[in-house]
Image (cartoon, one colour):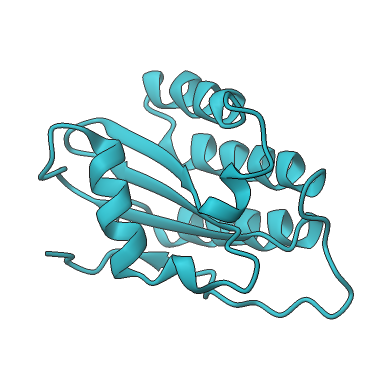
Amino acid sequence: MFFSEVEKEKIIAAIKQAELNTSGEVKLHIEESCPETDPFERAKQVFLYLSLQKTAQRNGVLFYLAYGDRKFAVLGDIGIDKVVPENFWESTRDTLRLYFAQGNYSEGLQMGIKEAGFQLKKYFPYQKDDINEISDDISTEIIP
């Protein structure tokens, strides 16, 4: 596994914290290499394979990292894309890029996930009756 147990715990804690701000659902998938030239295309495949489009408000978010290839993407579902500005994910990607360039993948993901939760709060505020529709664990399964 790319991350230590402590790093995984911190990333999962960041997901849980982000989801306290928003009804959006956050998922992290990591793999060593990206089988696609474009990591965004791979993120789309992973998003569908993990059924992240099945949230009630279509407000799932995938953080995708191919650490061996140093590629990443952030992908929001159509419910998010319908209401946010076109450049909505730029600040989150910039945060990730800044940390990743220094080799700080765990910290970068923690900060990027927190940033996403903060940004999504404006459009998808946390609801008192909110249920966790997608598990907060880190996905590492082999996806065809």
